[in-house]
Image (cartoon, rainbow, N blue to C red; front, side, top):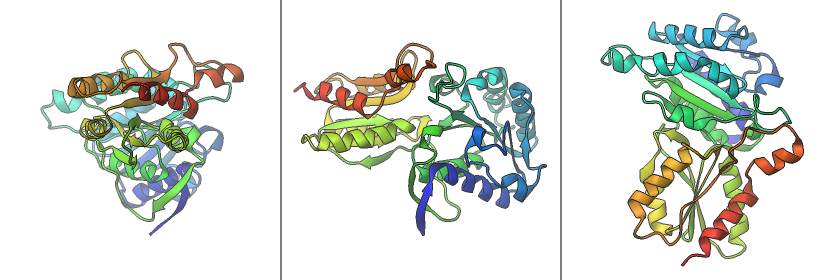
Length: 327
């Protein structure tokens, strides 16, 4: 049975189920009891499960992440979260040189079943060190899986799937989605990692999106429908590995595609998907592949600049009309 639940509350519910069912699971991060840091995603968990399993950590990103990687190698199932994804840069040695590589280096004899949860904190005039979304850095690393849920249903299902995966998973949630509600099943279920989802079917144009840009894509598709443009919306859900089969099947049908991911363009997930689309469909595309990404600049700190910096449904609509003028 499903009921209406917010994205933030769905994450909280997934944490609770994991802690209840798996005695090896624990949660650690800065501000675990502070809604200013994590919204409602961890509210009440420390009271319910105790400070030994839901831990508010010191401000030491590398030490906290490294300790959890070691715990995972020893058999635990940790979730380590960073309330500002920007500060995960301090953990890159632990994540890239150690966490992502151990299974390969030890010939599959050691797994690192850890979930590293990075929260994107866009906007709010907090500037470049508190508002960035470096998706491509983590998607570039062999040995990591990277999930970017866009709906409350998948926020819960992907977190539970990540916690049961034998490999390290980077789980990226976005504050701009925390209050968005949709139907979320009760109880325990998993959203498959590595499988995209068609949220809306269409015939004229494919919009391939991730994270909060999925919401903007759905709103853009509603507006485009008023002008007679039938738009298919593909929610990637996972950006490493990318479900290119679903993407290519959609593009094969529509012959036009806009890729919308709020990340920097150069060396981006969006650019990699575009390359894959061109390779598969270059003879049949009706238009160039259009990308909607962030400007090549750090996140600004003033509200007026933020409004210009972050793409939204209007940006997607303009990109969609651009590709529709071909053929």
